[in-house]
Image (cartoon, rainbow, N blue to C red; front, top):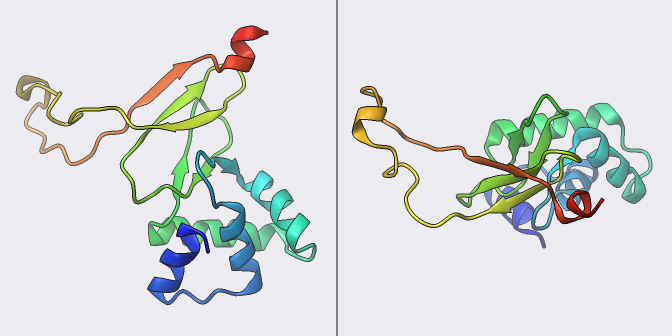
Length: 138
């Protein structure tokens, strides 16, 4: 069973066939699918699943805090099931590929007090940008 499915079962979330398929599609490392990609992959497993069901399920998963909604450069939103492990993103500026990365050090502590402007910083989101190997070779 996937990490996401285990977390959802632990919460007592009702796992219908449709919800289970969406969770299965989102399982894995470096998964950052758009809603349409989730739907296409889910439809391969459960042909009768509707686009509306996928969108609604993704919305519920985001509301529950089990999936992150990732937006980069005005592209379609992507869904990241790695919601419970601190990480940042590495994004290809050309094709939009997203990878999870885990920089070392405390990113909050790295912000000097004079640059906090009185804020009590609780979280950091860093996006590294560059070209993926395929785009760099092209």
